[in-house]
Amino acid sequence: MAKKALVVYFTWTNGNTERIAQALQQALQADLLKITAPDDYHEDYDTVVRQSQEEIRRGYRPRIEPAQADLSAYDIIAIGSPTWWYSVAPPVSTFLETHDFTGKLVVPFTTNGGWPGHAINDIRKACAGATFLPDLAVKFDSTGGSQLVSSPEEINRWIQAVVKAADQQAEG
Image (cartoon, rainbow, N blue to C red; front, top):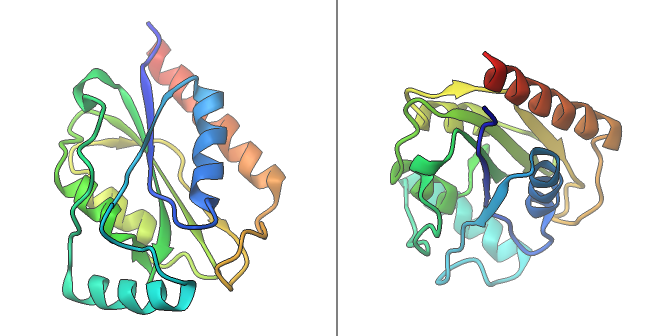
């Protein structure tokens, strides 16, 4: 029986996380769900950097649009976030804290501008009761731009590893 997959992600101005989410979505033949925080993160890069540092420091959880997917209908849930101050973006934290991942296969992935921090581990901790498929931290340039630094081959190998692991789970 094939596993039903969903790729959930939050992205900021340059859409780096979205690019990775879309590539994974295509390979898994998954549904796609973008996390949106309508009230926040509309400023320039430096302002958002300062804002996110303060929000992460104080554990702020912004309002996000309600998920338009019933997570209980999915076996595999990939979760993508930009790395902000060594952690996941606050809208992703809101999403993680408002859903149950017990019994799910979770694929954490992050994008970063130089240091992946503990964002992958933060996703893992928030998804108590889940089993994890291969994760990846993808590096882009350190100025908030969209220049890919990680090799496309590394990303493709990871995507193929996720697909293979998902297929093995479906068979077993």
